[in-house]
Amino acid sequence: MAAGNICSVLVTGANRGIGLELVKHFLAKATPPKVIFAACRDPEGARAKELKTLASKHPNLAILQLETTDEESVKAAAKKAEARLGGSGLNLLINNAGVMPPCTLESATAQDMLDVYNTNLVGPVLVTKAFLPLLKKAAHASQQKGLNCTRAAIINMSTVLGSIEKTPETYFFMPVVSYRCSKAAMNMLTKCQSMSYKDDGILCTAIHPGWVKTDLGSQQADLTVEESVTGIMNVLCNLSEKHHGILLTWEGKTLPW
Image 1 (cartoon, rainbow, N blue to C red):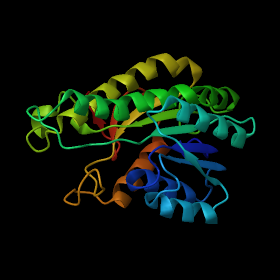
Image 2 (image 1 turned 90 degrees about the vertical axis):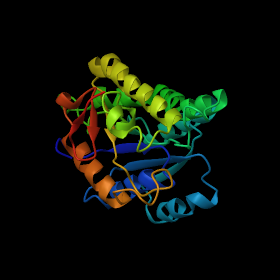
Image 3 (image 1 turned 120 degrees about the vertical axis):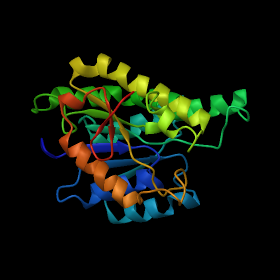
Image 4 (image 1 turned 60 degrees about the horizontal axis):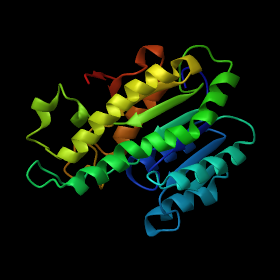
């Protein structure tokens, strides 16, 4: 990283797509984190097979069972992470887990909206709350000055589809109303976190990964997972106080809320 090397990172939704690719990129760094926590809902399921193979080859990769919408599951994962860190804090939390089901204004039901909101917003709230003491510990123990990912950071995976200002440019291309509303709320969460945690030395930033060829993004998307995550990793390397509390693209460009 620009400011040094990250010692520990946690990625939610790490069994596939962008989350899995982030884990691979961290493992492939010249100086990888001492601990990489890959969190997913079902570590024993078929979708976690590749993640388990990676963990068998890399002792610094720890898989955590974590259902982001289940507070007890989140708390249990935080306790396991704390034990693995052995008194050290957590440098980087990436709230990546999310869903994007088809949803229009006409088709949306109350349950549709609540289910997506629960996963895409309430989940990151619960995860951040549970891991906040470890993030604060890392920030306070760091010799780094200012805000950066080496010291302590919360990265919320958001989207341009959650940008109210950009909606006229993207709405008819991809309405997905429940997803848009949940990510607009996540953008507000990021801003609130940036106000609350700045004095603790914790950087808070939202990142739009682009339209990516994943189960969530579709195979017609513009970017491969590799292209998106390579860009995201470069962005993480260069984050500083000027990026605190804003929404960035995978290329490092600022997006309006």
